[in-house]
Length: 392
Ligand code: HEM
Ligand SMILES: *[C@@H]1O[C@H](CO)[C@@H](O)[C@H](O)[C@H]1NC(C)=O
Ligand SMILES: *[C@@H]1O[C@H](CO)[C@@H](O)[C@H](O)[C@H]1NC(C)=O
Ligand SMILES: *[C@@H]1O[C@H](CO)[C@@H](O)[C@H](O)[C@H]1NC(C)=O
Ligand SMILES: *[C@@H]1O[C@H](CO)[C@@H](O)[C@H](O)[C@H]1NC(C)=O
Ligand SMILES: *[C@@H]1O[C@H](CO)[C@@H](O)[C@H](O)[C@H]1NC(C)=O
Image (cartoon, helix red, strand yellow):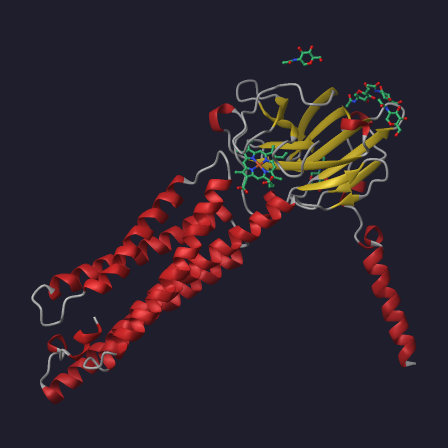
């Protein structure tokens, strides 16, 4: 009995693993086209809700394709074959968008050689016999008949959609996971689709995520928490140098992790040819400089009794606040660029609200505690003993 159930379960499992076409019905099958155009095969592409329909002609190695994707009428869409590589660079793309003057749907073809392509109509590296595009019901459809490069039936393809029209021609698209995963390999003969996102972009996406995590944890969590801890532990026992040790170690760890994240960011920036996120980059460099000054300043901290100490404190507080403010702003700038699932942005907002919410509570505790201590010992917290001067 028991083994019977197991066998049934195992069979179901194997079926669902090895027969995806039966389990997940292809959305593309129900789509229809103008002028009753019919295609032999179709594939619901993995991301961006796009579909590809085609008829392959073995006699001459050509294929008629129809690419369909939802996009606002003010945006652009593109479908590409990449004869040499995977991903965006090297793609031979067909773009469709509404002409800004005539309002007609334009189709242009462009070979993409860098991450800031000039989209103008040019010949591709393979023949395109006819092409057209239409827009209806919120979706663009690009039709074309193409000569499959190298007369090979398996081709790397990429697809994309965006709303940016920099200089009147299609500009960038979002750089988050669905958009950068919009490439695969398709066999126009068998219809098999092998999702092989370019290893380069896969690895880059991982590095971008690591960059985001390191920087968020360092600049956005460890450093602000370290400031709170310093203020709070100090108020618990102002005469003990413990708070300063904890603060120093905590902030140094935050700084080291932050610098690692910053360095990874510079590396990623230098690798994406043709694209610079000026605001994010500049803010990161300014942030790094101030944070480095802040950490170095610990080495030249005057003794509490020294008359320069009051200036040092004022300086240390203001640069500290600046670093943390810039850090948090830049984390949100990074979120906007990487555009991860919204839950990550929300999670970070919750964390930052908790930190920000705890601050006034600690502040109240601190002052009530100081007042109590003051009434007991008549010692003002400012006149703390000079023991912890030794730690500076
Ligand atoms: C029209 C102007 C375009 C701009 C400015 C642009 C810009 C970019 C940038 C900056 C990246 C990220 C590179 C990185 O990881 O550092 C990227 C990735 C990508 N783009 Fe585009 N893109 C454009 C058009 C297209 C088109 C037409 C397609 C496909 C038909 C496409 C497909 C992709 C894909 C699949 C990736 C991720 C894989 C890779 O990096 O190769 N892009 N794009
Ligand atoms: C290729 O073959 C198909 C079907 O045999 C035909 O409809 C099409 O016109 C041919 N294309 C070219 C460019 O010869
Ligand atoms: C393309 O390959 C097929 C066989 O796969 C062959 O029949 C056809 O003649 C080739 N066409 C060209 C243009 O080389
Ligand atoms: C594109 O190719 C066609 C035919 O091969 C040729 O007549 C035309 O001049 C080419 N256009 C450009 C811009 O190179
Ligand atoms: C494109 O041309 C090919 C052959 O020249 C033809 O079979 C096909 O129907 C045409 N497709 C469209 C969308 O006009
Ligand atoms: C328009 O799209 C909606 C869903 O996106 C669909 O239900 C409807 O049938 C479509 N209408 C036409 C005319 O294709």
